[in-house]
Length: 484
Picture 1 (tube, rainbow, N blue to C red):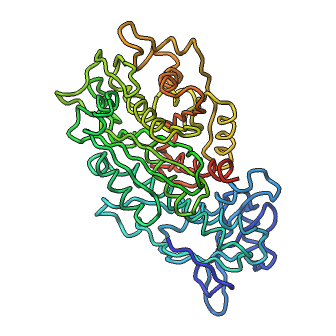
Picture 2: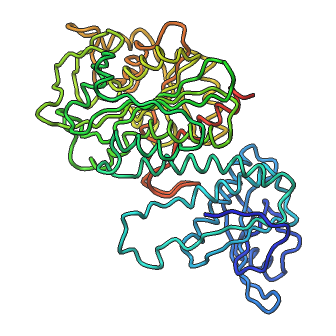
Picture 3: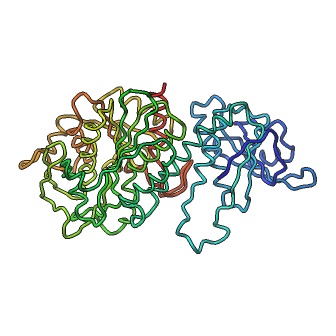
């Protein structure tokens, strides 16, 4: 979707105006004001009203989008919701162009960029494989013109448009089916998208990972004909400072391996690479907006399949750290991928802090449903910063407990640990497993995002499908705590 700015509102078929709670635009035609009142439109966040008026001999379609109270603490989210409501209504309406007229609006430059971000994010569609789609279902809205914007709005949007690019990239990766996105093609997509951005990309293949002793990660991959990959994406915008590391689980398709998942719903497991997808999208944002921080993103990429060569329950593997793992369940594979990725990241980059993201457990969905991702951490300050960044970005987090009692649940009688505990506290014992691979003194946070990367119903700024969860969270964390 093309977004441009104009000094004044051009003649247009479709015009949107912004309304605060109980405060319609002062210059609105009386017929529209009366229509809005009759329709009980009050300007609540996300509320819409549409009417038609005659202007200069032409019939003009006018939409009112509500942003709620001016003093509301959630004003930014409300403004994003208003922008998204416009897209949801007109994306497939047959209209090709929308003018957002901000005359007499109280929106600041930053708030205008929030409105446009919501509008752009809600416009994401992935119709690549839909060849028989009806005309009335096709996207028609192609351009948005912003008129009478306050000073600085276009510059503010230049930054937020990078966020939209990153979220869209992640959503595309997560949406693509497993026969299209697998470890090698995930890497290829990133290499192509990052060309010319200044991001440095390093890729390790099977042989290189074997030489490094990554038996845990490679054990997951050995049942697939698709070779594993480790992808490192480096952004150096902060001088000589040691980087912060983002590490993502990238199981491009997860059958569960020999511990096979039920067939019903298995198609959803194309999004088991949502953590790696979030890292890939966040790194793109940092490059596009020229973030003044040093960050490295690492993605452990495998496919988990039940081949005759697949890992068996009861197998013991040796991780890159030298610790041994008894594989109780081959469907608890994400932590096996992450543990080697975490070790390699720490040894290679000596990061000041490590944040991993993974669609790791169904247990976190049982705990938090689809409202929050779980955060587990060895550092209160890092946890607090991430929770604050989650609240600011809309990618919300809820802190979960950790402790020695939970850690004992993954002790093995024949190895250093097993890859899962009992049926209880599954998301916590998974976090305890990862904690054993974090170097002493390194601040670390694990985000279990299993309930958040895919939605069965539309949300404020996304349609059904991939949400892009985690991308904005990581970018906000960098803005607030690495660049501040």
